Image 1 (spheres, rainbow, N blue to C red):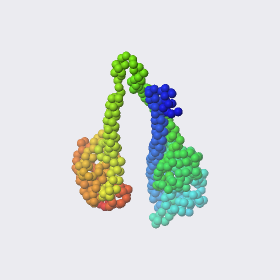
Image 2: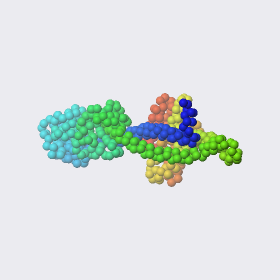
Image 3: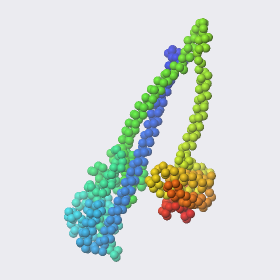
Image 4: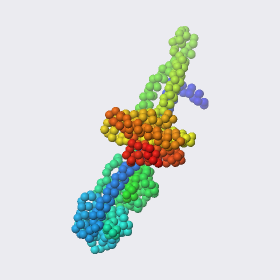
Length: 528
C-alpha cells in the first residue's frame, strides 16, 4: 500500500497532518537540542573546571614558594649570626630559641657539626643525644650537599614524619662547619599545613602536594601523608611539565580533572582536582532543569499551533464541503464569502524573504561585533588573530606594538570602572590619531592594546609609538590627570620568523619598559 492510499484510508485531514508533523518535528528538535546542549555543556564544564583547578594550584604553588624562600632567609640569617660563634653554647641556644619562636615555620630546630653530631637543639623537650652521629636521610643529604636543602618526607629518630630544611654554616675562612636545620612535622599543625589546607576551591574539590619521588607531602586524608603514589595516571605528565591541566585517574581509579603547578624552590608539585563524576552530576541537574523548561515551552508552542491550524485549514475544509454541493442554490455567494489564503501566503513569502535579508544583515553585523571591542571600536583578540594571520600569509613586514596603560588598576580603584572605561576610550582615540589608517589597532585585554603596523623597519613603528607616548604624557584627561603608557615593540620577520617569538619579545619589551620606570618605549635593542 502506497503512502497516499494509507493517508486516505486513515481519513486524516490537513489540520491533523499539520499537527502530526509538528509533533514529530518538536520531538526530533527536542532530542537534538538535548543531545547537543548536553555535549557542549559537559565540555564547557570540563574546560572551566580544568582552568579553575589550574589557577588554584598555581596560586598555592606561588604562595608556597614564597613561604620556602622566607624559610631559607630565616635560616640564612641564623647561619650568619652563629658562624663566628659556632662553639658558643649560649649563642647557639639563644639563636635557636629565637628562630623557633619568631619564624612560626618549624616544630623543632637544631645545629649539626660537619660530622653529623647535634651541637644544640630546640625545644629542649626533644632530648636528643648530642654524642651520637645521626645518620637520618635529612642529615646525610644536608652534610653531603653543603647547600640549602629540603628533604623528602622521612621518619625522624623520634618517630615523627618530617621534612628537613637545612642551610650550611661556613666560618669566615669559608670552612664548612655544619648546618642549621628546621623540621616541619607533616602530621602536626604548621604554617605550611595551614597554607596548603586553605580552602580556595569549591565543593568536592581538593588539593594535595607530592615531591619528585612521588611521596605525598600534604593530603586532606591524613593517613596518606608520607605514602608514595602507585597508580596515578597523571604522574608522568605532571613530572615532565612545570604546570598544566590534565584528566587523570587517581590511585583509587577515580576519574579526576586536575590543574597542577610546581613549587620552584622545592620542586614539589601542587595538584588541585575535582572528581569528574561530581562535575557531571552538576551537569545532569542543570540538564533536568533545561528539559523541564524546554518541555513547557514546546507544550505552549503546540497549543498555539493547534489554534492557528484551525484558521489555516478552515478555508480548505469549507471549499471541500462545497465541492460536493455545487448544484446548491447560492453556492457562488458562499464561495465568495470564503477568504482565499493564496495571496496571504504570497505576502508571507515576501515578508519571509524580507526577514531573511534582515536576518542575513544582522548576522553580518553580529559577525562584525564578534571581531570588535564594543567599548573602543578596536578589533578584539579574535580580530587581532585574523589580521595577524592575514599579514603573515601575505608576507607583509609589520611591527607588533604592545601598549599597556600605566597604573590602570589605580585609576579603576580611585575613580571607578566607569571612569576607567572613559580613560580606555580616550587612550584608544589617541592611538587612532597617532597611528596610520593602514595600521590595525586592537584591544586584547583590560588595558592592553596591540597595534599591527605594516613597516619595513622597527624604527618606523618606534617613532609612531614615541609620538603616541609623548601625546599621552602631555595630555590632562579629565579628573584622572595625566595618563601614561608603556610600550614594547618587536618586528616580523626582523625580530624572528616565528610569530610566537615576535609576540613574546614584544611582551618582554613591554615588561622591560615597566621595569625601567614606565612611560617609555622599548624595542628590544634600545629604548625609544
